[in-house]
Length: 179
Image (cartoon, rainbow, N blue to C red; front, side, top):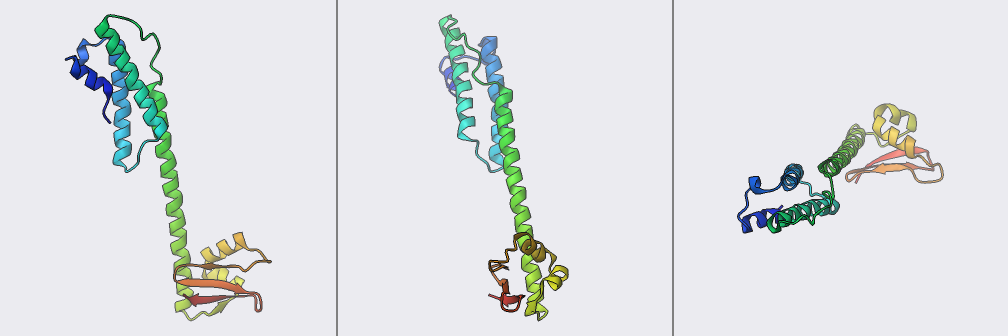
């Protein structure tokens, strides 16, 4: 991310040490936030628009401190619009949220793989039909899903990209088929 304060410093030939304490503190905070943003981006994630907006407001504030220094004025009486901790916490929350989503997706994928493997094993063992009690011992993941979602008024079952395990109402058995 490019910062306007860096352009202003370069434009006016200023070094960090030339700046007043408030500007230096603001720059330090922006650099800390920027490190967190770089780590976020290296992990393949983009910061939210809200976070970018806050960082830009911090940058703008530092620019006003630089202008006050250059013009020998003190017009920038306000404090920095966002504290470093607030922005860092926002980035951290985003990382946590995305990690939780990734974990949930991984768990769902693992469960899907188990379901596929259980139905495949039934099919490969020549099972064409199975009742709910046998399903409990031979395909426990499928059983748990069916138990949690069972509706006596609906067609119940599980379909994967390769197999299906569908209950027929006429015989109350689950039919195992390769798709």
